[in-house]
Image 1 (cartoon, helix red, strand yellow):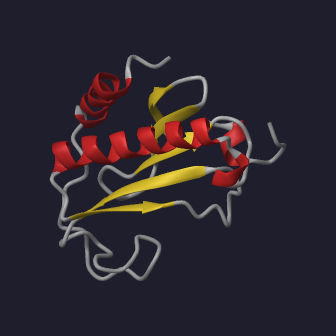
Image 2: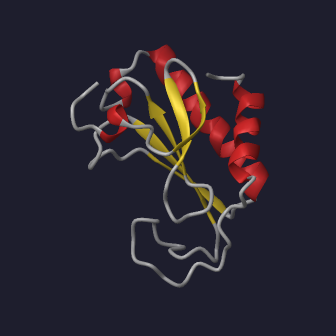
Length: 140
């Protein structure tokens, strides 16, 4: 754990799935289905992980993308690993829609319009968590 790190000191969102190495959270962001896959140990870069751990992290990230595509049918899914503000290894998995507030700009860019999409339903997180458990195992 690193003092002051948001992902060492907190979940980073509402947990949907996790194991001993990483967790998947629904981010507290104003975009439908915006998830993060967060490596549990504090490392900065993908190359800080051994190849087996890298493969595991990407397997989980791709499972999140697949589950979001199946559940929401987005126009596009953005995958991003930035970490400039939070240098703790994590991937953003962001479903994008032609009518979302920022499309076609990045979600961190300039708002283009009001978001025409209703945010995910109350059962969305539970359904997505079940999808991830089916794809990745029960987690913990």
